[in-house]
Length: 309
Figure 1 (cartoon, rainbow, N blue to C red):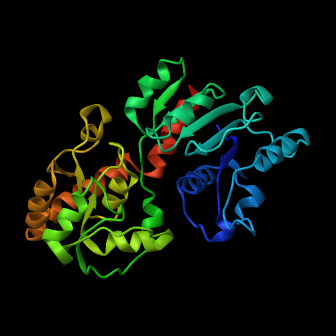
Figure 2 (tube, rainbow, N blue to C red; figure 1 turned 60 degrees about the vertical axis):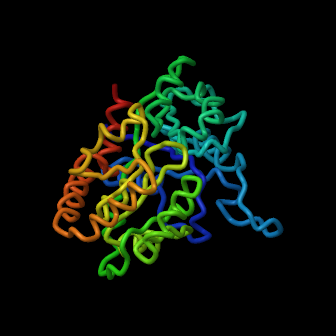
């Protein structure tokens, strides 16, 4: 069924943002023939405040959406908010336009759960990337589905001909209470973990290494896991609690490598840097799994199934 879809999210395209999870979902929805309109949750359409040099949330996007609805310019069948727990408002509520299905993509769960749960009751459905949060929302009677992280392979594929000059790379910065620093001290130039790469520079950084290293900040599945695999790299990630579900998505030692400590990570990085065939076999298996199960297309398939039930 072709739908009119309103997407609410904080965007700073005018300041140079060219890619984000909401933008990727928007593009996939357009491919399917849906009519999609974005409404920015940032003040002044994401422009920097001239004095504070920061962006801040406002109701401007919501007011514009309601104005479009009242003027019959746009009648959404689905209203979907992508948020990191930062934005709430008295006028953000399905009661103001109940004929649409309202969906909250609860980005940054689990750390943003306290903020997300405060507004979750305003929506018909909450999509959380953190499996344990499904049960937490259910305690409050919230209709919730697990919508785990994914990879925009089409965007990654726009970055080509990147020379592989590094060993294990990460863009997560210091993590694990000294874990990354210890790995760096031992592996030296074979391990880099600096951060603050944006747009295609982030993709170039991941593609410049033989291995993509990840350490979760809150015991969650990070999007970098999917993106590393989408770049056809072997991904080595900290072993998460079983209830988080990462080991149900990928097969250990065949599609992903888990480590249990800094020493374990050092040993495994050294091993796979010196065993090219094994490394590439695991990288290709991970890529194929992401391509089939964890792409933007796969997540939008799920979204359409969720809202058409």
